Structures are given as structure tokens and as C-alpha cells.
Length: 297
Image 1 (tube, rainbow, N blue to C red):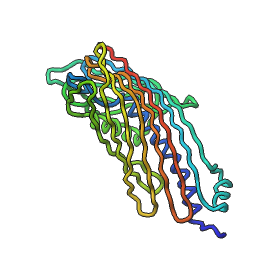
Image 2: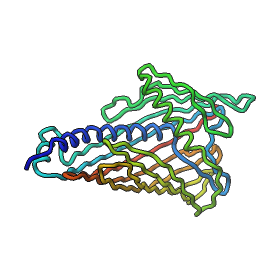
Image 3: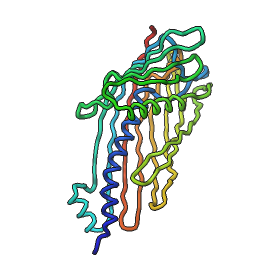
Image 4: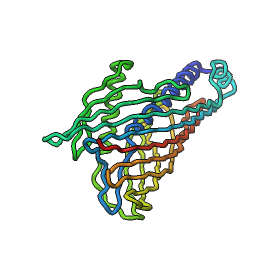
């Protein structure tokens, strides 16, 4: 059977871009979870996430991601993939650890305070840094709103990556700017967050729906069960892509400091992509474990 050159070129290109996509997702998730232990709650007292002045938030993150890609095509196409070093299935596992600190300065007369985010250390399974150690992000916080960032300093980071990192962190703050909630034990609420994952020439438009259920309140801490559902809206002309995902986790929330101190989440995602002469199936399992120690200055 004669193999169309265009199909092979696409598959080779897709495999490389998919690897970059997984790296992008891992770094983005690492960034988000290493800076913010995520989201929002309270009890029958007001729930709200606040960064308080003259307070340091020391944060640690452990993350793992398992990826598995299966290619379905003719024997000839699969043999060409093998000749070019592409295994079927392609299996990859990444592990990372990171530490950062969010430092809030003294409250000023205008209701603002300076903030600094410092990435203390981060490393993957090969002990290589994810974000350069000592990277600093500066900005301004207030007693009622999420911080506004204005600059980043890192000796080992080019300007393009600096701008991308700064925008990503600021965008995450915007997603955390949520209305105050009041909850009693047994009550729950949900939050929808849209985002997009680029894969090869396709774009996966996804919605993450996260539901938080208050299950207990003990010693000024509120304990939540978390469930997540990923749904995909596909924006693509040439390919048929379907996907979904779910996850379960738990969160501890400090009702005094209005901030989550522990966040533990495991998720699974899968999607199928089909073209005329081939298809592939991708499965991803992710684990996140985040802790925060709050210290008043």
C-alpha cells in the first residue's frame, strides 16, 4: 500500500508538538499550583481568599503526570513511525517538586501593600530547574482585591518567557477573584473555568467544572471534598477530536487567614483524534499535592 507522504509528515510533526504540549501543560499546572493552592471557601462563616499584609505564604508542591499515546494506522505507517523513533504506545512520566513564597509587605495608608513572589527552588525528575531558582515577581496587593503584578526579575530567563510567565500568573490571580460565599456543612458550589490546549494544528477548547463540598469544620479549619469534570469543545477543521476527564480531591481551608493550606487532587483525562488514515488515543493521569504554611511578619 502506498503511503501518503503528507500523513507521515503530519504524524511526525504531531508527535513532536504533542510532547511540547504536555511540557506546556505540566509547566503551566506547576506554575499555577506552586503559586496558588487554589480556590475558594468558607463555612457558615464568609468564604473568601485573601492575601493579608505583613504575611508570608510558604508553598510546596509535588506533581506527577503520566502520559500514554496509542497510534492506530496501517502496518506500513506504524513501521515508518518506528523507523523514526516513535514508539507505539508512547509512554512518558514526569515528576516535579517546587517551593515558592508569596511575601506581602506593610499596609499603606491608601489600602495597598507591596508583594513579592519568589521561586525558591523547582526541579524535575532529572533534578533540572523548571523555573530558575530565585526568580522574583513584583506587584501590589490590596485588602479587597487580588494583587496586580508589574515586573519580573530572573537572570536565567529571556524576555519572551518573562512576559509569558508574568501574564500567566496575573491571569491566575484574575481567576481567583471570586465573590464571597457562605456555606454550612453538607453544602456545595461549583465554578467553571474555560481554557484552551493547543495540539498540533488543532485547538482543544475545554471547560473545567470544579465542585466543592464542605464536609467538616474543626479547630478553625474547614475541610472540603473536591470533584472536577473536564469537557472539551473542539475548534478544528480537519480532525475529529473527542475528550473528557474527571478528578477527585480534598482541600483544607484556614478560616482565620482565609486561605487554603492543603490541596490534594488526582485527575484523569483522555481524548481521541481521528483523520482519514490514522487515529490516536491519549490518556493523561495527573497528581497534585500542595501545602501552604502561613507566617505573620
